[in-house]
Image (cartoon, rainbow, N blue to C red; front, top):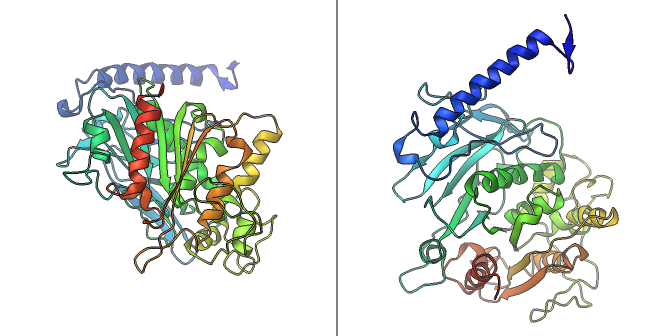
Length: 426
């Protein structure tokens, strides 16, 4: 039997026929006839986002649910998949809906929810968004830690607050998207949950949010409107993924806001072994780098590094991190390497926010080293061509300028989102 592109002709023909049949099925589903009437809007693209290698994809679970099918809590790994698909929603072998709109659900809060899966990573979670058929821009929020909680405690800052998420959504016509990763029962888990006993790098783990942001851009921003990313703490690391990995959407991001960016992600060796070196203090008013260092205490960020890299005996919490051990895990090194090989830096708006209040209820970004890492990220040459904005909220703590919709930090976010995404000429 003759061959074509490495496949026997007969098999190639069969696969071609299957593709044609699938295309016909998609045409019917995208047209809305077998879908749910309440879910039909102007967005109909069901295409999964793929990594640059084409090996991984994001899809929406037809069942609207995830299940853990393998886990070893002691070793810190778990595997997640879509729950069995219902017969009324066409799906593929992984339980991913052929038209993701058929698996979308609008809930009592007025938001539309979908459950996503990255089969190649055995990881997933939920996405929710306001689903008006017309919108002026899209902004995506990612929470802290492993991102298992919805990042916004409330979209509405109160009846007197006209600079909150609700105002961006209702008055300014912005599509506000939130992501929350599945909690598979692993400590320091969520998007950081390994899917095998083997260690990973922090760079490996960035592939997950990067794929997710690509899917959101392709499917929730089909009109190609201005696009922004904001995340706090571990989510501040996540929103940098398209830049660190040089994603297909890296130049389509007009607004990038890492809030309370933790030191272990910027430079694991320095952050893990501490204290931070001289010349890394950031002057609040100007964001200028000064001459005195700020110590970095052992915190949850260091435990995340250890759970991902999985290197007993040589680790972050024990202050025995080496450059070789941290290979592939340093955002600083990754951005340096991009520039060294002639890559282009970020040209949009970079909005770096920190919270330096110290109270019994607040974790200050001074004591945890976030001022150091955020300041160095702000001044990294990769962002030399960006419109850089620095803001220190002295009345808020770690991550609060993002999730506290009624606070002074978010008022700054609101202003820059409107200016950058809706009124770029100002």
